[in-house]
Image 1: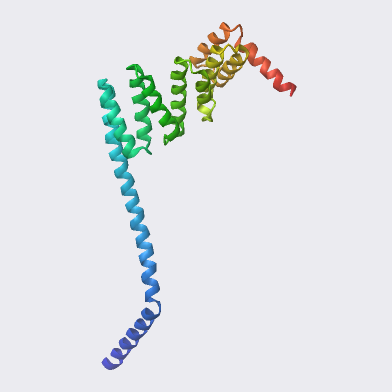
Image 2: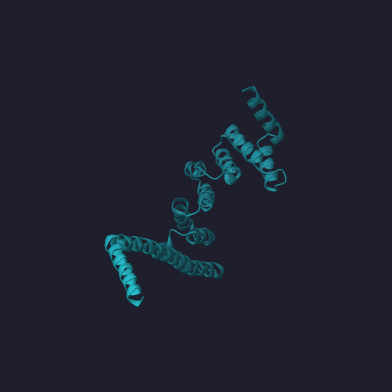
Length: 227
């Protein structure tokens, strides 16, 4: 019996050797690919986590400088963040905060440069739109109306449609283009929720131009029905 059992074991061992000789190389490479992909995925997730943590630390340095009102430190901290982690949401958020401090410190050109970077390179669509709106406001202050209009005429998320239209209305009104300004204010008014306080400001602007928001909206509705 023992010899018979040993013989069976020997046969099984030979079969295993034959199987491994035939398929072992392929199995090894499959395992390498699978395990390599798993390791790469884990490595990528770990790298992303570290990137986010390091970016958050630099963003916190910007925030601290903003709170302290230290303009030079704000500029340096943001430059470090942008240089190392410019593709993160934290960099775009910090850019908006830095631009506000720079503008309030009497450095509008520096603020414009930061906002321009966020508008072009920001990782988040909403933050890019917000940067364009703030940049347009600075350009309006500098009477660079065409440049301001270009900023708010760019494609933006629907959530910013009212603010963009309001900003366009401001530019057009300052350029003496009252009919076009009224139309943009009307768009802004119509896009805002009825309960929004900001809507009242749009009404004031329309009234100043001799237009009533309800009348304008009704006229637009009639024009749409006619079409």
